[in-house]
Length: 113
Length: 214
Image (cartoon, rainbow over all chains, first blue to last red; front, top):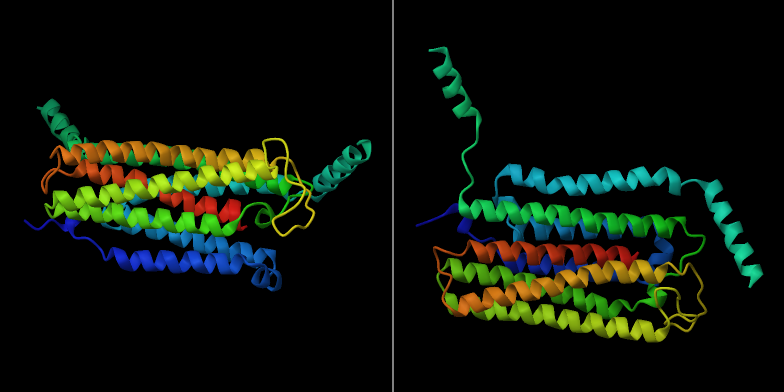
């Protein structure tokens, strides 16, 4: 009675990968690496590592790799929509004039205290 | 004559009904996808608030990383024990499944305890829904948007509620396991519960990175 979906991947290997990535994340976030790397590179590294960890959990622990392809497409939709959401918000956040306005506003609040 | 060919054709077009275990799994996936969008919206809102704020206190100055790094480790471990529980019952070993399920629940409970401890310490330190602490963990003076508190408590609270739900869910599963409900041929409910638990782990990986590390 051999079922294809009942063959389990080597979970301990996934565990060690996740553990290594977590330690690496914490190290990258430490000030002595964060400062020379710069905010953008640190952020990209951290997000990249978080996404690969999430991918490992979904593919192996949630067995997405061994399911029908359709399920993988369904599971990808929230991720794509979240990326869209961030990009829709970006133009507003990148607006320097608005930033200056906020800074001025907070200064007004500060002086009034 | 033409009518029957149309009928035959439509029979090919429609998919067969979902089998009970495929139905449950698909149902859980659909729930998790909608849940992922809730978390995605929360994290995107957090990003927008943080990027739009005139000043944002560095999270590492307010939130301790060591404890939450350990909490991340704990959830990863509990995910491993969860897949081990499923592996055990698919091999017909019910006792082993119950042991691993109990370990998974223990991991979840310790996680919740640590989060309660963390929240209490942060609130005592001055991080509330309306205020941020005057001094950071290193003793340096800090300032920044008071929205730090609400975003932090909303996101970690929403996740904590999911862990609480997961612990209850797994406790029900363990009770059924003790009552001999599951076997090598009947275990899709363990797999479906596992999907939920791994999702909660996956979300914490994201929360740990975006809220604590960045």
